Length: 250
Image (cartoon, rainbow, N blue to C red; front, side):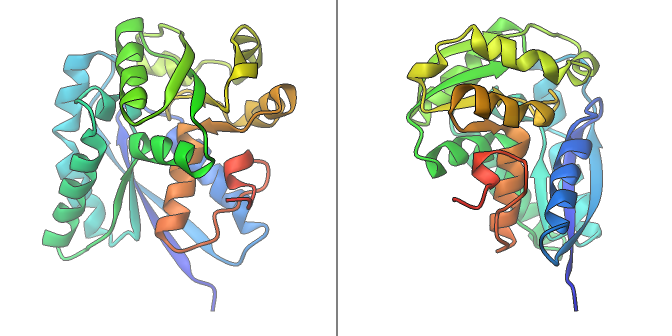
């Protein structure tokens, strides 16, 4: 009998991409593997990507973990990279442990992953040391994200802050613009490209093009989160057309 896994997603209220790109990848996986997936979300209020709203939103994540554990999901993904990274170095470990504990206390124990933790772990998996980063945030928040990644042991040799303050507008950013942004960066000196340090900025349609253009592995927050979920479920982390990390090589 084919097993169906329930994927829980803790989502900023204005996020429109997490619930499209992660399901899209797992639907692609369904074409080559027998497992099936359903998707279940709980939302935290957030409209403007500023530190104050991010902190207030993060405080709602406990409620979301409880709600999703009521549905007895198999794994939960916390879908806001910058909210975690803006809370201070290493906060993804604190958040993951606390939210997993909430599911346990509710009798629906399930591992909680964060897109922030998934991204820094994915760079380790592919053996990257030097990276370039593209992020949609205003420059001060982008610098927080870059500093967080550096604190995890990576050298960020260049980054681009697209300075889009409204989270809905982040979700409307055209992924077809990403290859030209990368072209303007010193990608030749990097081991890997973080094409979207944000699960709200669409990037999946550009991944194959940027990998072909640069000859470098491309990671996005959504790809890293999908990889982490599959690993947590003890499933082969392979998705056709979703970049090097999900190629089956890792």
